[in-house]
Image (cartoon, rainbow, N blue to C red; front, side, top):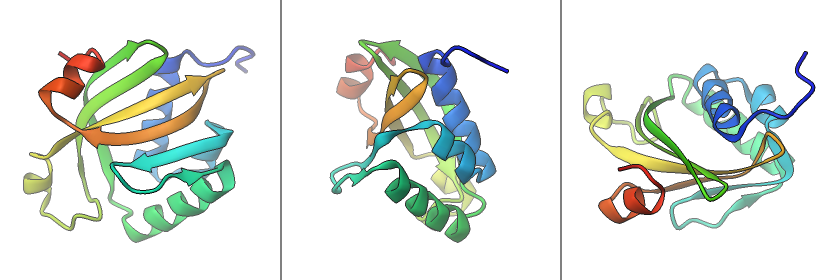
Length: 132
């Protein structure tokens, strides 16, 4: 049994693994009490329990949802992941959805995610978060 917190990149990889397996309880365990989910320009979902409810809904609605990380970087206390998804709410065939990339940005404190944010994948964002 681990007694020290997960390093930031390991916490993010574990979070993605939980998402990919539809393991909402595992996600819960990796969130801080004040966890925030920020999807592009939408209002944030704030608080662990609100996010657990949101993930239950998403996992039930889109059980085939998978995140495919392409590159992971850690900089200035943040972990950035560029990648693509399949099986999401976009409703696209996997071969089309897999061509759409985005960046997930995580703030990790004490081995738990305080923030999970989706941002547009572009050259400026990649440069800013060390994903070059």
